[in-house]
Amino acid sequence: MFGLNRAELIGRLGADATINHLVSGGRVANMSIATDESYFDRDGQKVDKTEWHRVVTFQPGLVDMLEKHARKGRLVYVSGVLQTRPWRKDGEDSDRFSTEIRLAPGGRVQFLDRPNGTGGSNGAEATQAEAQAGGEPAPAGPAADSARSETIPF
Image (cartoon, rainbow, N blue to C red; front, side, top):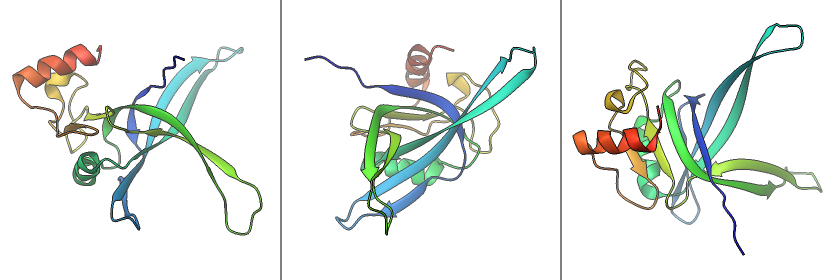
């Protein structure tokens, strides 16, 4: 059996990351990322569309990094897996479903701008706040900048 489940986004954070403590003692980080798309409708009118994506991680290193750096408006690249989970609202008999991007081991977060929201969109100008799920923050410096430009094609 073979399968591939991978989701990648580049977008802006709609709010600061929220960090919650779990009963088990761990922590979870949640983010909301907006991606924009423009197209022309049948009448030739330009239509701007914003799609919102929920991102979640339980990875301690990523939670720490997001708590420090994930602020509203920041341009961010995330790589993770799609996950649909059921949940139930109090007083309701049927399940609801949420689809989100889970930053599991092997997932990645990279900020593509400076903390104050300025800066270009290339890897050389990106902030050094980058981490991979299940591991330590990615290395910084010229070698890391070179690796970034190879992993994100722009």
